[in-house]
Image 1: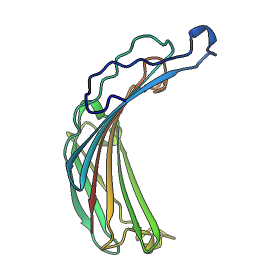
Image 2 (image 1 turned 90 degrees about the vertical axis):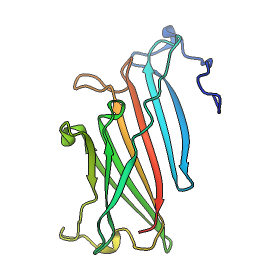
Image 3 (image 1 turned 30 degrees about the vertical axis):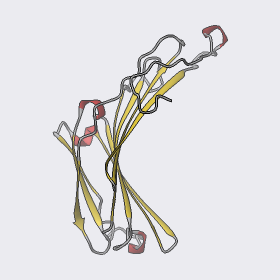
Length: 184
């Protein structure tokens, strides 16, 4: 609702605490979208979760770090490696998604990595695996050379601990998103 002005205050309406069941939560979400080039876009998303409908501030994370996308192999199907500098706002998880629509068939590859796997490294480093040696894998399921591919890289930070959920009172979730279109 803020449009291009940013930084605005908005009114929201919530359920009074007396009318809520145990465990009920409100959430507020804020997003920002930008264009880097005609084939590359960025976005930021922040959500907060809370019980009481009182004045709240929702703060977006930093602009997402630039993504470096390189080839990790071309046979028997194109594979990619995604590297992006880790940021404190988005330090818990990365998802690299590769989507194609070719000859009426949609192909999607998602590769996840947690902060535990990153183990404190300065960058997220995610490589699409070569599954050709896996029993039952059909290489025609992989991405196709020459087909337009949308690559989405989503880095995520959140407030979850072993004892609390993201949706706990005071919980938050932030995403830094970069989307680029390539043709392998």
